[in-house]
Length: 365
Image (cartoon, rainbow, N blue to C red; front, side):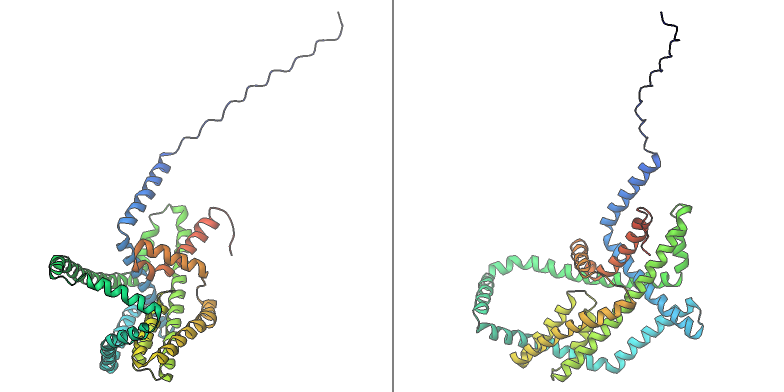
């Protein structure tokens, strides 16, 4: 037997116990359910939400004008909002009184010349192979409706279509009127509604939410200012170009070009198509010159004017803008197309601040 003392054997390591599964907090379940409910409500109330967003845009514009008056003459913000509204109404009434008859006369002439423009376009198309094929298909489609019995059978559908168009027009006018009222209230009581929205969040997140809301408002204001400058530049270039080409109704065509330019990507094609169609009444050569004019205007606008404006306003990647137009247009129709760019501005700020910085921890500044 050895005299060396027995060494104590190491105690067996305790077997690793599986980590207890973390129970999902009831608050997390409730929050997820509320988010799902909000998503469903947003889908069914998309028209209301889009009108509300349009009212917010108008309120931002009114507040920007009121702040400008405050800096110039020290006017109170609320009184400044009312002053901006009165100035806008006065400008519209003044323009209508001074240039209204001439504009209405030019617009009536433009509408009256559309049949002649269409006929001139058909005459030009009849001389091409593609045009003859298109006209043949249109005539085949027109022959289908020659039967009086078929016309009588389609009469109820026609009445329903007209009734639906009237209801949609009246509903649209009422929606625009309500949007203007909401915009006025938001502009007058912006701090109140801003504070009320932030109170829905936990206290620890309210300061950050206020900062993000302020940044969104600033970006929307810059976008509105840049868009107004761009519309003005396009309208001036179109008016001068059409006047130099001696195109009749140059003013109304330039006004259409300026107004439709607010629709990104699609708007310039709409105004250009209207101007070219009207120019066909004066001959193919003038129509071709008008088409070239609008192409040059869009090149100047896209390559020179917009980059200069975006240095001081909001710069959006062109590919992202096109994708946003397609996405919002497919979801919400024409209203989605009109509001696609400002919606993108808001989404980009929200993703950058609330997700990239606050969740991922990346500093973008």
